[in-house]
Length: 456
Image (tube, rainbow, N blue to C red; front, side):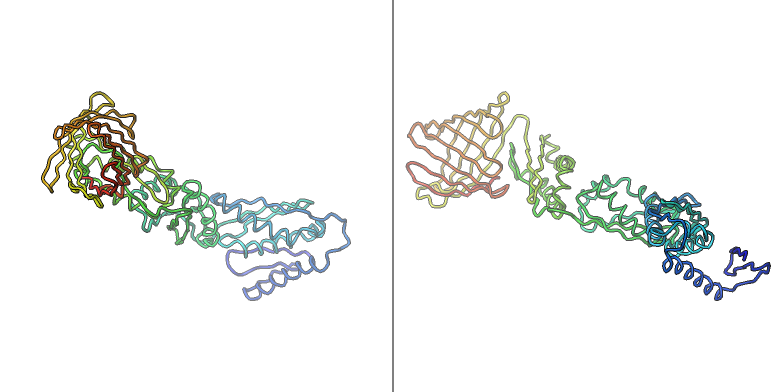
């Protein structure tokens, strides 16, 4: 029999059989299609050893095109993989001549199967190139609405504003990339689109922002919205703090500026450590600019330097320096010292002579009993953490030799030799925070005790 099949635009099929045209309505059409598919596939699966020339199909490949030429490459790869899986299941291991003998019928069956698998598209053309490697040439047409615009929204949750700015810089192309990924897809294919956007979108984020995992939610429509939520990956910052490394002015004068900056350091908590490491310079400069905007810093033209040490405990080291002067103030309380003068207020005023030498005056006030000690002296700095010097106590006519060495930002050692009375005093200092230090003192005449120091 000479049988040909043509499909119209509606749901009604017309078939020509022995010269007569018959109309098949939807219910009958569905039954005929099911019967046709079952018959064809049953013949292949139940009778694979038909007496034809032995030439089994070993591999199936797909040549896929879209009629609108707007199918994203990542979606195309996913569709091709699904069609190859269909082809492998039906064709591989069967004799190619079996399919060649009934090619037009098998094309109808394969087109119907692809239509059921690839949502949002319909097969508008299918040609089979049978051989040991069989090629399926398929043309797909989108059906229904297609995605015309994509809005990408990054949901930052509790991420601090500074980190949001840095993430926006890292993901500056994400909107463009998501548009390229989705525009042109049928809205009905969003099952494909969402899974592909999860995979391809995660790859995009991983390349630009490797310290976060990204989760995607797609709201479909002609104008599609992609929501990206970020979850920190790896170690996160537990503590952020600001530490004065070196200051030449009383720290109380910097209190307003440092309070605001320290609050920003606390906001770093919860961010991935690796993210802060990668943006160390930008964050450090941001903190420096924040300190420099303070009115006191501007008025006295202080030189501010910052250095960020990222880690689970992230620390911002701050230098606040004047060009020529060193102004310092302390108040202390001795604990366990049996002598007098257990409380004192100490003021220090120094002036740079050259790069590494400082001449200074120092006044120490003891409230009980009321006593003043007045000193004058000189210090020579070997770098920022070590100095040696001499000072003269005008009140008691004593000459002192001085050594001071910092170890990191928290520990320090100092030695005071009173040449006049042959008294040695050694101190080990530990900084509790920016405004409080504790010192262990050993004196060869008076013994040892603790001193609490308030850094004014």
